[in-house]
Length: 288
Image (cartoon, rainbow, N blue to C red; front, side, top):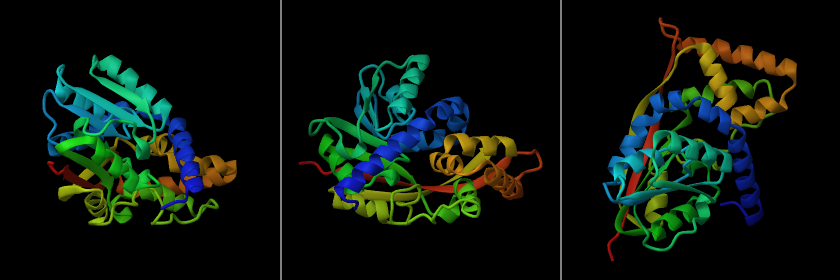
């Protein structure tokens, strides 16, 4: 676990990095829905979310799966989504308005310090957030406290790097052109909770019972090489941060190398498809 000072610096950097790509996430909303909607469905089902429930979504970003949960709970229920990146939540609010969803609200706060009363929620979800947190135990403890007895929390995280080349390919190539150290597997990042049993262990330590872990395969599809490149440059906060630090010549060489690698996954119709894998872990707050 990070020290207090390092913890604060990490949270601030995460906020700045994700705010910087908020506009891109809004532009790519249709692509995100096509590729990630199955995770929303799985999280909602495994958390046992039903009409009338009050639910919590940790790390909502641009609104997923909070908006899908809001539709599930209906007008008699409600959803509260939280995220550290205020600009991402601005996108979530605009999406809610466009979709005509008025039973969801979004709050800016860090997932490790949620400000809700004990026993407040009937269920909780989190999609691809926990692995970026500097203190996973604190976040899970907060969710456990805020859930009602008998309620379930279900979270999705990416599994191992070698099973998610759609994300790791660009970073691996960039390391050959930029002064970027190899990621520390123990530090917060896309795959920090991907090892089998790791998130399940954290959840059990936080007091969750009946913990269930599933590996979920998913195909990541990009309509073209050009779309993949734009997607990575604009949406992937870690990739964008490295590219911005490179000089123009190095950046151009790096992008050419990435294109060469990506073309290895091109299909006859010109699309780019990767097999990926996520872990979905669910646990229950024991009844009193």
